[in-house]
Length: 386
Image (cartoon, rainbow, N blue to C red):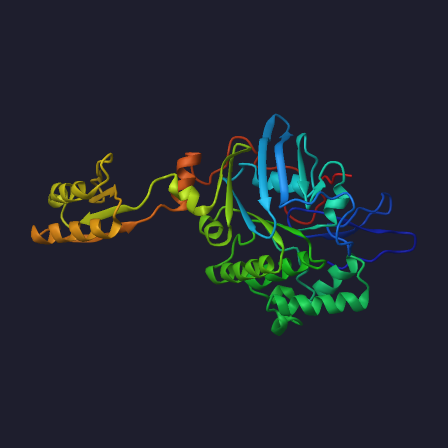
């Protein structure tokens, strides 16, 4: 992705949710402000607050579709905050609005204490953005990619080289620094993309589906990088469809559906809303289901009857004293000569929370269009708030 400016021509930075930044020729228009610039520690008009991101009543429409319909969000500084929701629920639109990629239609928001609508340029100086797909140039090496981004952000040659070297070490890419990015694994490419988004050490980093398409090893590499960023003081807003990813990384989670926040709590707090521990027993013989049900009923919570899945020969019920319940049922079934295929305790997961709150899986929602401005393939510009 090399670009050059001829005589009398300007290079400007255009933003895309498909990656970090792109440099294109924009000789006929004023230069856009980069997502981050080398910077003053605090914008003079920034509001000092324990929250790095605040949004109240955000609204955004695409035609007759409401992508955001009164969305609220509060992200504490120095944390990973997860934003979960089905496809089309409004996650990516929320990130675009907060990152000043699109103008909001209503409501208010501040990022790093700066009003998104009143001072979008000020917001861009304080944020980084990594979209769903790596924005790196596959022809260039990892080092060359980072040095190029440094120059785009006006660091100058020497500072760009120094910053690239720092980030290569920070993201464990030193050994591959001079290989072309096209030869990187998926996880390495995403780490390089994260490094590019951190060229100027932004206060807030927006990560939109950062591990889409990665294998388990690649996902783990990205998770380690995100944890390191937060340990260094960066605030991360993470949008993801991978519930285990949010569970492992986020200290707090907001669930969005049909453009609205429908829940906001810690991962454990959300799980507690769908009940406590459940004892599950799978009978080896369907004829033993009655005996299994009776044994489970004796230890189940007073207000809960055991549930049976005849097809899977499974009986389960909520229990309070997990260890005592498991021990008692195992002993009772053994005394009766009942053989079980499986017996164990299951704690609620975010999958349970997600299904309970949204009532559906990760299929497209009815509110956010499947295709919006800036969601097509390739390198493209999207609406940028002035």
